Structures are given as C-alpha cells and as structure tokens.
Image (cartoon, rainbow, N blue to C red; front, side, top):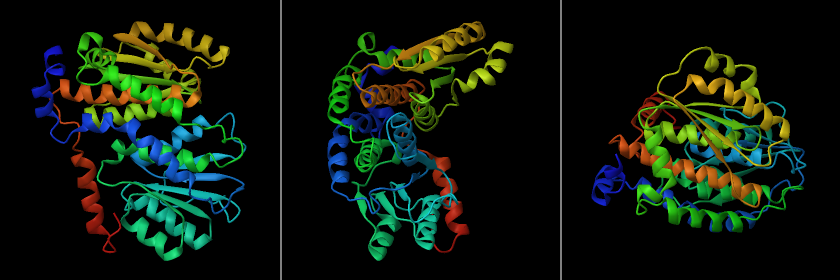
Length: 355
C-alpha cells in the first residue's frame, strides 16, 4: 500500500481529474474569498437571526460557521437543508443561500421562497440560475470562481460565508490569516510528495483502509468537522462512514457500539483542547467502554491558537485522508456518478429545468 501512495506516476493515473490538486488549493482559495465577501454589504445589517441554506458541499460551510460562532455570535445562526426556508424566518431576518453551481434544486426553492416572503438574502455562487435571479431582483452576490466540484470549493464557499458573517455582532473577531498560514504549513507535510513515513494523512489512510470509520466529534467544536470527514469519505473514498457527536452519542449510540463486536470498524475521535472538562471526562469513559468492540481507536486533538485554525486544520487533514484512502483502493476520487444520475432523473421530471 505504501508503494501506491509514494509512486507519483501511479497516483497520477488513479487521480486523472486531479482531486489531490483540489485539496492542495484550499488554502489559496481562502484569502481572496474572505476579502470579496467583506466588500458585500448585508441587506439587513442587524438581523434578528440568520439562516444559511444549502446542500452537500455548500451546506457544510454553514455547519462549520454555525459551530464556530456558537459561543460568540450574538445573532442566532442556523442551517437549513430543505427546499423552502423555515416558517419562523421573516423580513427582519437574513437568509444566506449557498449554491456553488447556482442550480441546486433545493436551494433554488429556498430562493424562490425568500422572494415570495420578502426575506432579505445574500447569494454565494459561481453562477447558474442563482446569478440570473440575483441580477433580476437586485440581490447582493458573492461571486465564486467556477469549474470545481462543490466539495473541492470549500475554501471559496466557507471563507465567503465567514466574510459575510464577520459583519455580525459577536463575529467581528474572525481573522482568516492565522488559519490560512497554518493550512499552508500543513500542506507542506501532507502533500503527496511527502513519503508515507513522514506523512500523517497517508498513515491515517492506511490505518483506515478496508475499515468502516466511526467518526465521533464533540458539540459544538468538532461536530461539523466530523460531518465533513463523513461526506469526504462518502464522495472521495466511496466508503460508508458513521458519524455522531459527544455528548449526544452517550445517550444512544454508545449502547450499540458497546453491545457487540464491530469487526473492521475504526473509531476516530475528533476533539478540541478547549472542550469542557465535563465532556472530556465523559468522552474518556465512553471511549473506554466502546474501544474493546472495535479494531482500533484513533484520537485526534485539534491544534492552533484560535478556534478557526483548530477547526480548519482538522478539516484539511480529513480531506487529505479521504483522497489517499480512495487511491489506496484504486478508486478515482473525483466522479460521483450516483449524484449526477439522480440529478439527471430529477431534471427530466422537472421541465422548467431546475436541477
């Protein structure tokens, strides 16, 4: 397995669309995205609440932002994965709609809903129907460079969202510079050119090869990071992954895991050093109860001087691991035929062309 990950020609053959290059560019997307978004004025600068609407690779940015701001932002922030906005949202609020393609059916439904209900909104997109509707109605838009898979545009999507949210009271502290610097440093040691013996991401991929990852985060610090890892394993690695978060899982999933042997399962715990002492103690006890029933337990503690840096370093590590895991299995990490097949069927069923 090591030979595969350390063979440039083999990696190039297995990754013809360049998902490794997409992972490499994440830190380089971030600075420009944040700056562009900061120039966009919120249509409601003092909203009662904010709902971030999106799906898939766009919605995860909302989850990362929601958990990042949990303890500081004085405006409630929530995420909607639906084809309409929640009933509690009104003209005194703000909707931020993320669709990388600009053609996501569910998020287009939210946009039409916002128009009908006169809810102030900002759009984050690379074009598509979103761009056309924004121009028609005069909505503010954060424009993204196109041409990428949505999951490969996290730097553009997430930092654009942070640029918008940093204008809210209690979110002014957001400064992307330390996180970007840390990600570039991590890239230098996680890149495919770094051999497995010195590459933490390659080593983790080898430990997870042929296994089912059980990804456990902590609410709120690493809860969304866990969901990003799961989605990346699903789409890049094409493997099943289980995801849950402490302390909730100690009230349900702990029973299932501790009850019987889970062969070929690896528990991966993602946590932050600032998690409350109560949760850290609870996590330790729960880990000890579940550990005998899985093949291995891997515990990863976020590092960095600020919450955004710690969050993104764990996210970035997971992105690398997911691609290396695909390549170990001889799988091209880029194609997602099932998603496009479903969208094609939906487009045929909707003559108006929404997809």
